[in-house]
Image 1 (tube, rainbow, N blue to C red):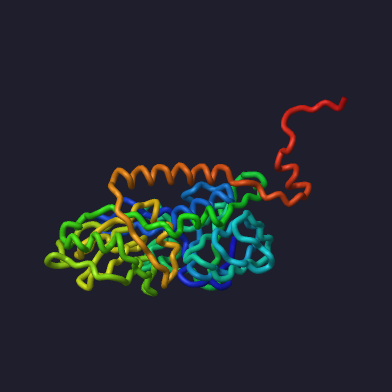
Image 2: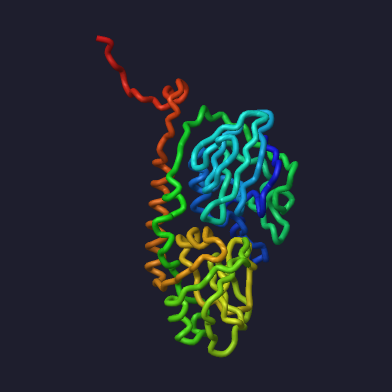
Length: 333
């Protein structure tokens, strides 16, 4: 079990989300950066869709109670007590972990080797904070919250680590965020589509799990920004009457009555989500076929990355024995 000492801002239990219920007005919620959450789970040898604790800007402080807790921090932070990020850790009963501020990106994750004992609602443990649904009473974590961990029969875990540059896609951070046009691109002047892919936008401070507001050249409608309400996908770029785009994310509304000029390619959403307010954002257009090919290639690369995380050798007897350094039978002659 873990006890939350200080939660930090917007800290909540999340998984891949509650899909298949938008027609009933229930949004999926779920992790903002599915890629980083999967990497965090890989560090503790957990399934990629297992529930994690998501935090924004500043990580939580927590304490292990009753039993040792194996976990991993995915985020550029400097935790207390010398607990490093980006690798498997073990907290012993009574031991505390305090995660400091994130540096250079917005969202981090805590993953646990043993599944969190959080109620499942409509097939998901994800918290929809705006709607007050799922997770722990539909809310962010609070001081004093105690979360149980399911006990499994798995043996001792190896200490794995990941290069933060690869985990956060730092090498491609300056590349444009790719867009697929539509579903209402025909409601905009032709120049608006050119402007969106050629001019820089700035991420404002109005960013949360519902969406990211951008500021830059206005995108002009042919007639009006209003349409008959229709469904909204993760990454939809909605443009109200002021012409300033809003990228709608995990806790977006299920339907909306403003035109949507584009949708962010799914594999580029993590790079957008991890930008901090004030960051410059540039876009480029791709076809549906190009977006699908990029998403497939990214999924394959992520699967390979998670499957091949290297071991962190601490040179203790337990670590050396667990690594199985010698395979097969050797002769004493």
